[in-house]
Length: 148
Image (cartoon, rainbow, N blue to C red; front, top):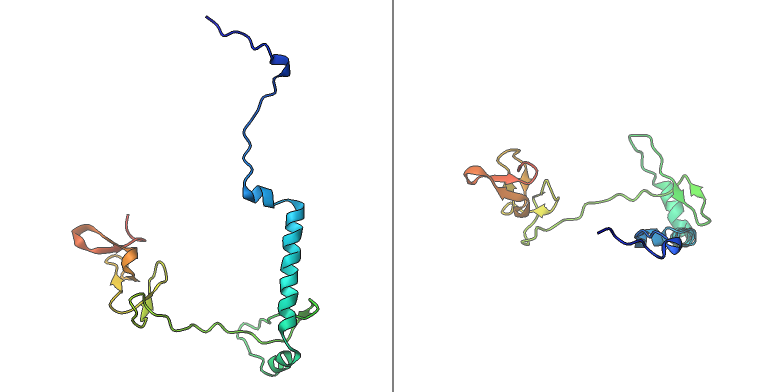
């Protein structure tokens, strides 16, 4: 027996599922405008915190770079300045998770490792932490990069 006809066919509107996530909700024109304004406010507030004596001292101690590139800085009014002080990222002394002084780092996850926590891969001979090492054939230690 065939299906009977739908009596409401003239009023029928096909429906489809539409997923609206948080990303789609936030990517509207007004929301992006608010984010842009907040970002500019934070930039200007950060530039206002710099005193004029910091800028003068930075001009006196300019660093000479080998690649002849110059660093631009954001002024108090939002303009770009060609003078300023480049902040060097000095690596701080990291401790191993066991508490020992770090002698190296894991080649996969870059976690600080002491001599006791370093494991050497039997295939690539790089040092890894115990979480990035797996037991290979013949009970040899193999890193997650080489395993497979």
